[in-house]
Length: 97
Image (cartoon, rainbow, N blue to C red):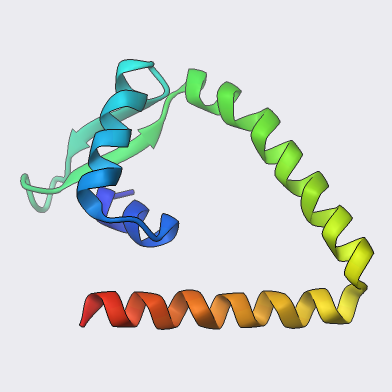
């Protein structure tokens, strides 16, 4: 995935994500390479160590989501999810224009 795509997903500025990716690369959690179609673009992928690092975090996130859904109920949680997706899309459109 490109650093631009990552910045869009995490709703952060690209220079911030680039610095973070650099620190993650130094830690051995990701690797960077130039995109074949555009040498100016950097592609980022998880290493085996990165996958091991992220697994417990994903497990915690899923448990937290289940707790929130349980507290709200399925339909309100679904509506909240839809609203958050719309906010993210609106933010992305505003940032790209």
